[in-house]
Length: 295
Image (cartoon, rainbow, N blue to C red):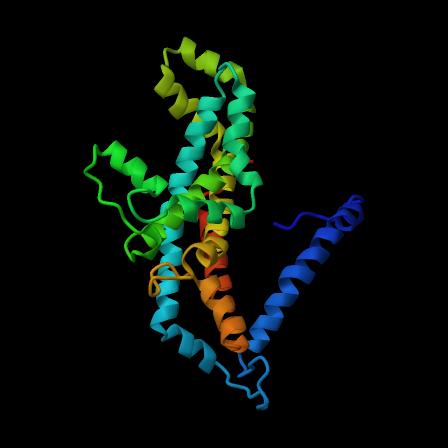
């Protein structure tokens, strides 16, 4: 049921106006331009006149195996990274919520990768994934397996390129989710834990019946934001693998940028972004419906 207008309604709209204007200018308008371009044959620098193609551009990209592979890579990346990163961030937040010595130092160390730009992080991890036995990651795995590990060229192996990008992304992003979850943990009243302890609940029982319900809204926010960030995957792919080998690590955003600015097919790139935007919007709305926040 719509809420009735009150005397505070004009003030509320005036405060929301800058955000609404920003969304309209930087999200709504670019989407409408991309949506319009997707129905044409526009190419950058082409002397040929622009033609109206209708839905043909969408039919072509949905029949393109490279686009479908990029879409599958995006889905696999999100299905692995979102739950893994959320669980890891929750574990770190629980650990850093304990009264440990040197706690500010550990919080800083875990959050520090978030401060660095992804381009810098990707370059560092390219060095860590260096092929051969002298590569840091190969050397570490060889030491961990007592020499049983065979050195691999992670970024040029179709089976390892995308997992290598996943690991880099989790390492760089987990600190962001950790800080949000840590704030959520500290907002849970201590009286709830005291009441649970009086009722005989142990550590695991308190986690299940106090911590998780208390973090419900925070976890929903973290999952939704992490999902959106996971679908936005581009920098790591561009710097670490260029979508290869073959199309093993290509993503939709990377494919759209290549189509628009390397092959000059700006209409094709626009169609890819429109399809991807609608998919991400549908996933986000589905998450919001399945994981309703408590008020």
